[in-house]
Length: 146
Length: 79
Image (cartoon, rainbow over all chains, first blue to last red; front, side, top):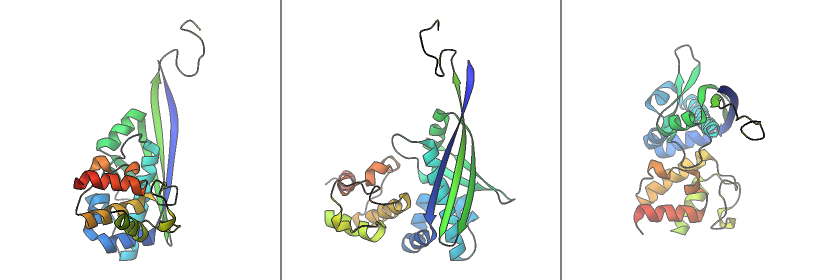
């Protein structure tokens, strides 16, 4: 048996004004369906600053889902969470269906970077995947004795 | 129902093309609808039809066309 390592990358951009419109139009219901309590608490400041932070988090969720590559139903938005640490940097925390997809893909670690400037917010997510392969897997051709 | 779906798509889908020019089976994501816009479409549909989309229906295919949205709403409203 050997361990193969692969990298997956996901990225997404979100228009900040569209998030601001969603908060304005749907209020708490939008926030509760998409973001965790921790994420909402992490996005403080003026409505414009808060919208930019929320938009970056939505981009991180979508980027993570691209990394997870769901074949069936998509994970609940709230099961893909951006955790903000006290020093300011962020990590991804998965639960439910999202965590199950990560397990299936052998994802051992996720790294995320968020940014926003003007009306655009973006995120990049990198996943480190590890999978164990048998002695006859990994691209060898031929039968069992090859 | 189709007219209401199209009105909601026009208001919340942020589509770069006129909704009237989109066919029933045309892929809305291919037409330019983003994931975030699909959340707004979902919430607006819930308001309009007094339903709630369960997690199992939160898949891209649920909102990928006018026809798909009609089928999903039919399941939720029992019509």
